[in-house]
Image (tube, rainbow over all chains, first blue to last red; front, side):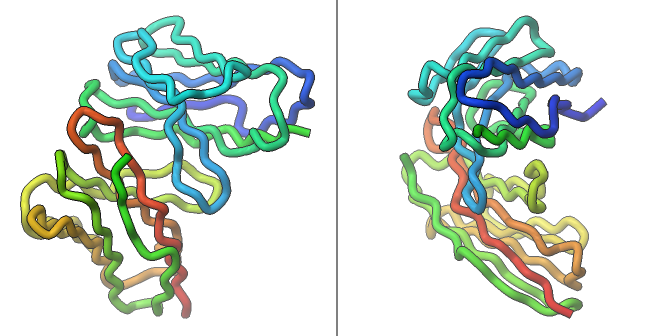
Length: 114
Length: 109
């Protein structure tokens, strides 16, 4: 299994809603990532988990809350989002935790905040 | 962060060859990735260069010159399905992977 699986594929939410994005990999990868990508822009790193511990938070607003329940799962909890948070949210994983590791991306969740 | 520069858009003809360039700051350079991303889909890995020279994988080749801070992705025998964004990415020192702005490649018949 060489896939990173993300659910849901599409999500529409209001500014008062609470929702969660889910990501799963069964490749035994030790690092997992959340990226945000706006249209026609490159992915921007949000969070990195290394061995199930949060190692990087790129000054992301607290309305985004990551969680890594175990080595295969990564969640992103969303609360009180703003319309400008609408974007493609990509999960990725890598075998190791070094900066030059190849990333395996999920297909993303297209989020629209109304 | 480190600057990675690549052209924003390119157009090429089906069956032809296209070269997408990428330049980066050389300080602390670890290696350079190329990813392909179709609209609305996840980026997929194409190549990784850490040593100088050309690496070929079928229709795609990637070149690196560490001393010049320069890489290119060469696509041969272009097909319509090659229309996508091509992202150059690298890490510097122990910092996170940094993506370039991406090159949107359009293939025309």
